Amino acid sequence: MDHDPLVYLNGSMTPLSEAKISVLDRGFIFGDGIYEVIPIYARKPFRPQQHLARLFRGLAAIGINNPHTEQEWLELVTRVAAAAAVPDQLAYIQVTRGVAKRAHAFPNVELTPTVFIMANPLTPPPEHVRTHGVACVSMEDKRWLHCEIKSISLLGNVLAAQNAAEHDANESIQFRDGFLTEGSASNVWIVRQGILSGPPRDNLILEGIRYGLMEELCAANNIPFASRRISRDEVFTADEVLLSSASKEVLPVISIDGQTIGNGQPGPIYKQLYKAYQDAKSA
Image 1 (tube, helix red, strand yellow):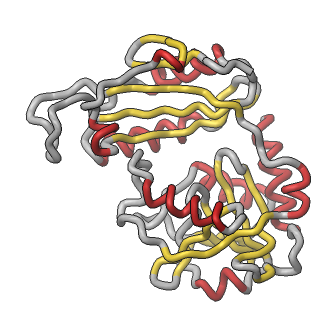
Image 2: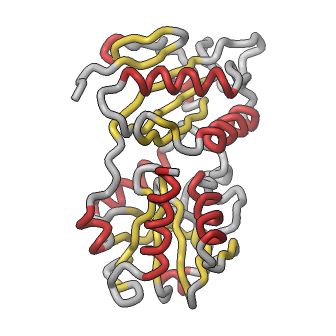
Image 3: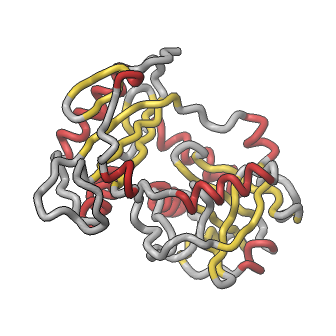
């Protein structure tokens, strides 16, 4: 594996070890930026239009001028992916407002956004993890109220991920005022009586690209789907709980806080959706 891969930074391909930004970049100083992660299978981006649409929404939401067209972004991602050592990758895109004297409000002058793209190997969860399922922990969602923006300001998510790590768990499943929101880096789903349900698409969750994909896969496989508020009680008494993300794909949860979910085994809806997900990747 290449330990000093080529990355894209502000118009140039450069070895990662040589990629540098100003310490006054507002991404570094304030976390003032947006990011996106696109899975790539066999060097082909998976659902890139949906990922770039979310990137564009995020840039618009915080007032950063989008520096590229969709086609230009696709060409840049493809360029970085082609330089990577492995065919299956996660392309990471980050756009910050740019470099300016430190002041909280947006600068009065128009800045040139900082654009960074790198590709890391994509290794989906191994067979034994998918076969046996994963353990999770619960916690109160203490993040800000614009979770729909894929901001690089991820301290709340970092603390949630650390909470999971400290409990030797795969993920922290978060609740706000007694209702399910999401994991530190994944959408969370429940299955009750054969129906797959996820929290509403609102400002309390980042609508993962897999959210729309899961809805499509349900429709194609005759699995009833619902988007609604889900109580903490419903999660712990669900027949199945699933996680979805670019790196996790679809994963079954077999316990939360040490309490068994369903019969403690990956369930039939998970198995259907996992197979459908793999078929979608190779379509």
